[in-house]
Image 1: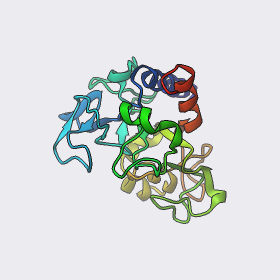
Image 2: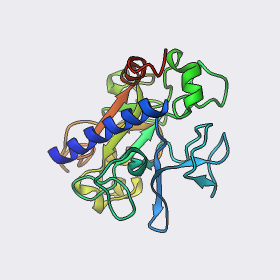
Image 3: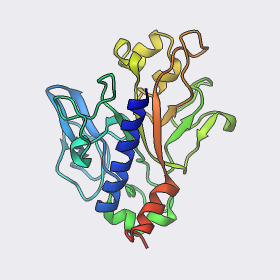
Length: 239
């Protein structure tokens, strides 16, 4: 567990270093199968808006439209993370690919369809006036939580506006339930919420199978809005 935590912390620092060097957050890497993935590189849509339908590319797109905002992986090859598997993806101590989530929805501070945090030009133009409006970290999936709400403020670990990126390990038990449906089938309700591809995630201390929402061993680390802006302003990337 400690080794995976160290890997997550190292990955976070590399993501922030990338942001300092490139003026934006990296897009997540894409993995569908061993035959269909971005080989650990960040993955974009060729179109500046909307989702990708067989139009993903690892060629950097200035518009910043990522292919896998909420269901992607750490772009290890892009940021220089060294502990990888055969396809070039960062892994935790159990050999599971490390997940990476980045804010997507256009903040109210910018025009419609403007992607602020993954576009260097847009982050420079709008950055300090913006807060990410989509990512949520909840204490529990009970409610049930939705793609845009932890239901109750008391169920929030970090609300909208506070988180620009999330990095997490799916833990030792992931191999027995690798999808949201499978995790739900095992009674792992909170873990299922981290695999369903939306902007709401769940994080709390480890829990055994006897817990109300089932076993939970996911490990999380995230980049706050203040942390990102602090680094960028301190380095002179943002005014």
